[in-house]
Length: 252
Picture (cartoon, helix red, strand yellow):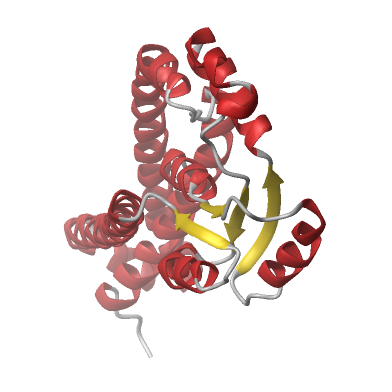
């Protein structure tokens, strides 16, 4: 949950800073902005004047930059460009830099690309780990139920002889499997939320100082609880159905 949230925040923070040549006139700005907007991968374009950029610097880093106010301002007028597909940000920056009015188009280059690539790897690894964990859980449940069925084979055969229906015979094993998975899911949920609570209280301040935010315990806990319990019920039922179908032979 936090990986998705953090990845989204990082991706949203990556933008292209398009600096204009110093000879650009104010009346040219609307035309330049419209030229940027028609590019395929451009989502939004925001103009920031050199004076506004300097004021932002002073607010963030203090009055040491006051001496650059007025004619000594070394900054350029610029457009801040948000893109639709972060993977194509390099090509978009090159397209923007090709305009005559553009002095430079910058987006962090190697740092941004490395960060986006790393986030992609982490996402794929997380998905793979989830799939493997679910597969292992299902296999363990399957063999646990198989052993339980075999240990109660005599009881099952006796019930068959006295006319018990297949659904009546299956029911205890399905209930057992669902209870086991739900209990395991609740335990995993408790451990996860406890660990996340400690993590949140310890690192939230540092993360916020970097300009990002972690999901609160409530924001992260509610959807995770729903997912864990739903998956537990589904896997418990599915494992029981497969185990019973492959282990119990009903008289024809």
